[in-house]
Amino acid sequence: IPRKDDSNPTREYPMKTLSIVMLAGLLSAAPCLAEPDQHHHHGDDEVPSLLVLNQGAKWPVDEVLSAAMLRLRAGLVRNLDAIHHKRFSTPQYQQLAKKLQQEINHIVANCDLTPEADAQFHLILAAMLQSQQAMATGDEARQRQGAVHLFNALQRYPEFFKDDVFLPIEH
Image 1 (tube, one colour):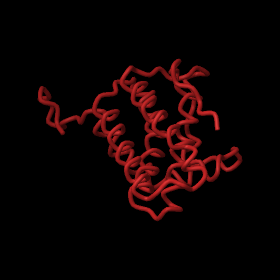
Image 2: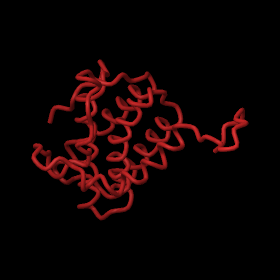
Image 3: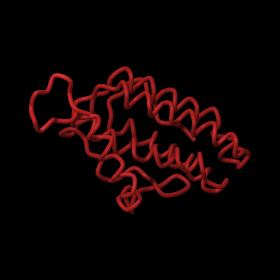
């Protein structure tokens, strides 16, 4: 999408558009990049090991990202017991996937991070998109694994992003 005020014939593309295109590539590579030695909760962690701190500090977030991540956390916590005990149905996974997709869309459209923080968050976003796809289209085992991957992504978020109101999920 060219910038409206861009008279440059090379037509630079906005950072978010390029980030989305790059994210598509990460989706296919993320399983290969997961940390092999890390403790996992009920399965493989889909958050790539490429996540790094900002020179030892957590990356800053904006209100849009913080609020969306809190809504995702609350939605998962509400259903965690049923998911854990395999009492979550296919329609429930599909509904959770739909809510996850809505939050992802909201984050992508409205989040305003620095380019460096945005690039780091896209690693978590890639894991959340894989989770969404598994919950939306998989059989119950794959859907449950998608929920576990969402849990893992949400657990990694406060390790790398300075979001004072977001607490890791105790489970």
